[in-house]
Length: 110
Image 1 (cartoon, helix red, strand yellow):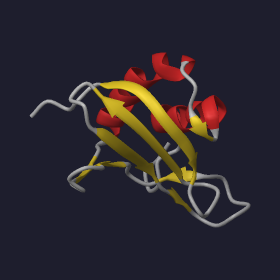
Image 2: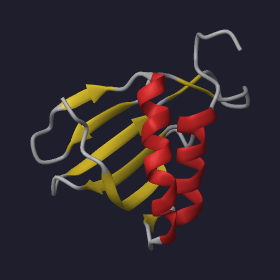
Image 3: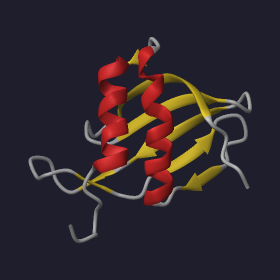
Image 4: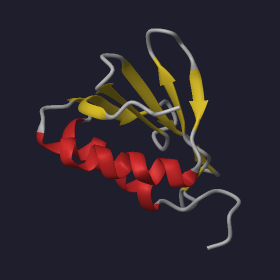
């Protein structure tokens, strides 16, 4: 099944732990999606990221993403950093996309 292509980043920010990311985007299928990138480890330790997931807001359906899928999504999101973005703005969205594409993966050897 084809994943809908992002057309606009609506918001991006940290979650409650100030290390995990939430990014919401509108896709070409007319639905909005939440991308969740959870951080692992303790505060003051280098940040590693657990596997990301995506949730379609209207249905609530959640889908885990493999790291290759996450990297593909990051490539699709990068060109959308030119639009106004709520909450953490372009800075937070850019940090999230960078972590999605290149962040250290929890439990994987570097």
